[in-house]
Image 1 (cartoon, rainbow, N blue to C red):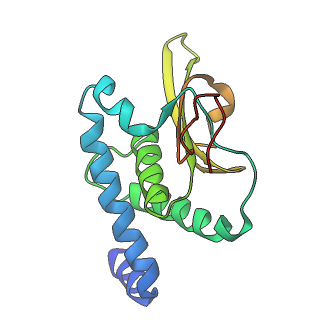
Image 2: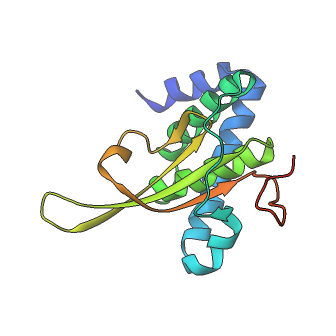
Length: 160
């Protein structure tokens, strides 16, 4: 598809979709900057370590989740920087956090066909996978971060 056709398609979109694409582009850039910082420094900002958010579905969020997923996947192809799985997952998490929608970011490892260790990141909200779902099955989860959980009480229960 040539550039003129892409520009026409973009200009024909409604203003909310354009804003969502700009937001995705911004958060992909922000996440790429975070990726250049040592992970031990950014990990605390990703949520509760080794915890997960609920798998239950909130049907009212379904359209928002699909829109965010689509915007991240499309805009990651147009960034001037690397926007692979971890960058996409962090960007998606921040976009969901802005909308007060909980999510879980997963980090996994596996061995490729040459026996070399490879890593992958993906993001889930409720039962829906926002980023990274296409490859997650072959990876073993080594870490996860839950964003949007209520604070734990002293008895280990969650407040609402």
